[in-house]
Image (cartoon, rainbow, N blue to C red; front, top):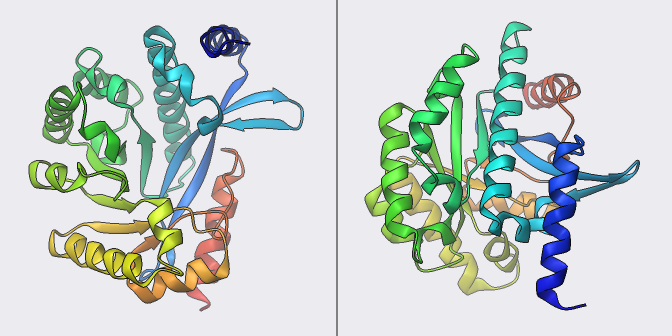
Length: 268
């Protein structure tokens, strides 16, 4: 089948899935190495393909090239996350900030900062409860200037900013110079390579030092085994995230999971 036809079929399937409630969110804790507790959670979009089949966003990332579908998914993620955050707050749960991913198109479509501010207020929340995570590739290409303006507006409105996949392209350093980020996530591939490549290990160590000099929380994402965990701690990461720490969980399971992680941290 032609790739363009494949894309059309995938987009149409995704539209029907969204209408039928087959997209859902899971939440993955980000664990502070120093504090030995959960310091925030990240919202992750999943597509329910069957009773035991759950597709991750990377498997259907091409659907975000469709402008209308991308915006519909963005609004679904934001409204569902905020509704759940309000429920957790009412139940007395505090997981720190909740991180939500935003694409370049998400940021540039309309006045994103004001729209998000209105949504946050509608749920009785405040902007400082959210962290907007943007992947480094969003900072180059035709939308780079618009992305920059959108991030300035988000920061002005009180939202925390995080850069994901730092080190994947050349655009990250310029973005650090121009924006006030709270968190820096190192590119997964660079982190894995640092385990065996001394050059990449040195790069990661210096990136961590740079982040600390700028007052950023530096996070190692994609930690999947004990070797990666030990390396992240030795290199000086502030926090870690990945399957080795905790698999993404459904909303109703997250409070219990975070409680257990915090208890384990306090017990050493």
